[in-house]
Image (cartoon, rainbow, N blue to C red; front, top):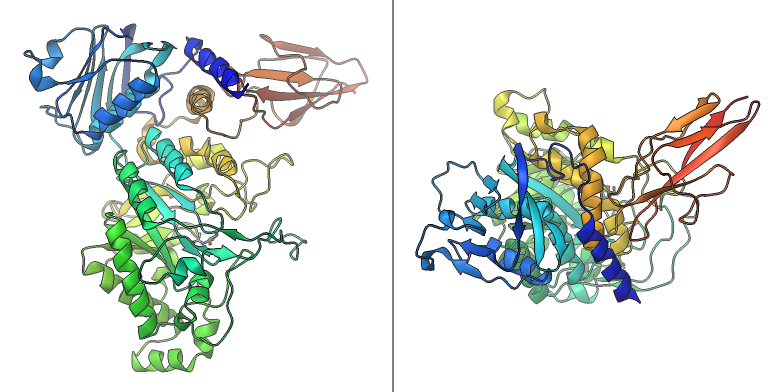
Length: 618
Ligand code: TNX
């Protein structure tokens, strides 16, 4: 049953053709330059597929794509061809050895009726392939067409990040890979893996087994919104999970094949209830009974800046650096209440002995000490913007989350900055609309348009300081995301907006073209790939009141191949109601008011929220 439904879905995907894709041919992120041309190339079993570097990750990726989609073509090594690959007709050529002067991570993609030529070094070739695959129109298994075009492209930022909190809720390795797949499609290259927090320590540490023995399990979990009225409602269900080092290494390798760096985050000194539960000796009061957090917010029990704590955390970091080849290690640093340090005689003495001003100075001391340990092996630390308080560690990169102020201050001090402000629509745990149909979330309001319009480079910085804005990131805190499907719902489609913020030049961004052409196309692709996503409301209609007698609406679905259904009888529309065909005409009798309710329903059976338009002829 499930299989035949999927087959039907795929068949639909294969036949969906000639929709309006806009100037950027439906590609996300919009490339720097797209020149489309007449005609198309057909890819079939006759097509030669040639690469000049058989070990390049793009070759394996393309091979997997071919197999999955019914192509039996074998990729051949250019050096065995006997002629120049670029002279071969009916071919796809992947070339890394090119005389083109390409920017870092840049590529050129040339599609003519006789050949597809993808040129790029390292990541550039991979991104060229990703763009090409977005353009492939599968006609049926083993046969595809691709429109002719020339694309020149390179990213705006070197750090294009997406974060995932696996402490509040744990997500299995298979899902992490699916998440990385999604990042790869949209050319995001840093996966920030938030591995520890108050509610669970999720990373195996061989030398200290208690981190996962005692720190990876909480007795129960808060139900509903933390700031709501039901603060004492819990689910009475034990919750646990962690990654073994083997699983981590496998995921890191999987990411590398997609040019994604994995940045591990080990939170300190705050957000450490799971850590002190595992090793109370790391707290300021080792005799106190600790338990892994069961609710959200900020806890006051934190790591004590003692030699014991630094010894353990140093060992933890040594194992972390073994598992993660990334030059960055994230040490957290956010939301560390100072209550425990104020009460601790040890901390107060340390402040005096080290000539620190106060507890903020002690926080800075903590981060600097960890930085020294990580710098020894050539690693760099990233910290949340609280690491500015009490003085920045010398080589730290700052992740600005409480607005842009921290990022601006850090750039002015010549430190690198990654922008991820909640106020800029980059907190993907915030609600996507104000509708009551929206699922439980932390609150806030970050619709697609808000995420899209964010520009990570503050105008207040000088040109030199602006160079310190190395990139941008979307954060996915999972207090209110207990399932992979919910994570996908919160991430898509906002990941499309994030991808253009991170990649596309500011001058190439265009929300109208993005939302009307590129988003519908990409959501259809995501649906066929088995991702959940939030279905945007129908286009051409709004939640509002309109006065008059006769109305004509040009309402379009927000997903390619989807339908818009409506009611004017007050009931909630569903798939069984009338579909909008061409234009929708509604006439309201004199003295009456009608509620026009519309929804989008997708080929895979997803629905948008209801849009209610009051038509008033009173
Ligand atoms: C703040 S962002 C936090 C997280 C929460 C998040 C919820 C940051 C550095 N700390 O611990 O999960 O808000 O939006």
